[in-house]
Amino acid sequence: MQTQEHVREHELGDLLRYWRHERGKSQLDLSLDTGISQRHLSFVESGRSVPSRDLLLIVSEKLDIPLRDRNVLLLASGYAPIYEESWEVFEMAAVTKAIDRMLLQQEPHPALVLDRYWNVIRTNDAAPRFFGSFVDLEARQHPRNLLDLMFDPAGMRPFVENWEVVAAGLLQRVYRESVGHIVDRKTVELLTKLENYPGVKTLSAIPRTHTPVLPITFVKGSERFSYFSLVTTVGTPQSITAQELRIECMFPIEPGSK
Image (cartoon, rainbow, N blue to C red; front, side, top):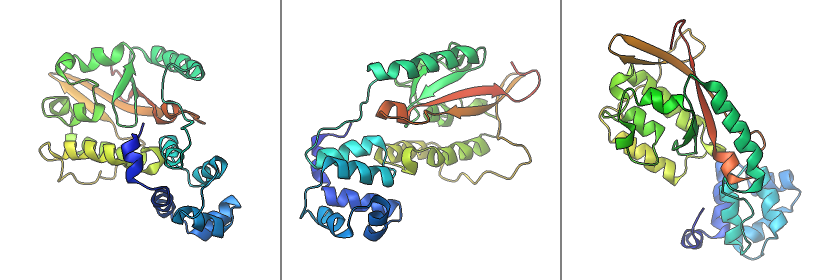
């Protein structure tokens, strides 16, 4: 969650203009979308009018602002945040139960639950067993980050066939799967960290293939394990935790893959 110091650095008007520009909307466009007069929107952005909480929620909905950032808008206007960020709240119980079932059903193949920054939140038993057969997972920093594991020369990178192609595909996924299609500050920090690894800055685009998916093939000695991923998200999230999680299930792509 954003801190009060962070909120004070960004006045409400600046935040609203930022999100309008991100979505390519003028004040007139937003007025037509929301039914709120352009004059009123202009007064809110200039600080001449204090918006109601309902106005902020309507604008947030029409601009498709991520729930985490909707809390920031509310805080900037003096309202309490309304979107929870916790696995422990009662409303997350059904989601947690569904995730646990998915993880179990994915056995004996790996499945991981990731947050928006690719940190591993939880896994099935197969995931640490698989990745741990290549590298010492306990020696890696917590929370473990899947991208860092795949890009680090001391991680899975030496075991990935055609690593440059795979890495370029993963970087495309960062932008494609970002919440609200926005690469925020923490995501930029993660990408900067990855760029410090050898060869990352010069990665080329993924070459065109005739396969429906881009497989990741892990090689260890004479053994080869080829997988593709299916990524699941919550369809209508109403909390930050639910919106930002992704379940990545790895499926074998070659007959006989273990």
